[in-house]
Image (cartoon, rainbow, N blue to C red; front, side, top):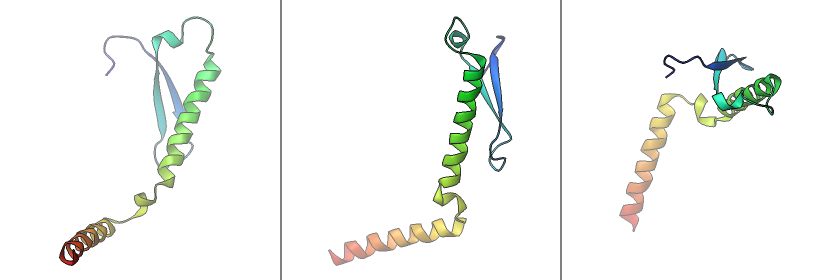
Length: 88
């Protein structure tokens, strides 16, 4: 939560609008002081982080499964555990 303090932010448009429209990064105060980090480097780092997030979310195989598939997997796991206890 930002209260009563002016903060620097970087807004990045989403590489894949399926997940989000834009990302908001709040820049640390010590990052902007002194030599070392340029505005272009900050923007590039924010874009890289947004692209990494979108790539990770799109590779998750469980994101596309419907709710009933999770129910079947849970029931199958319980059935296997029950069968294992009976056979041992």
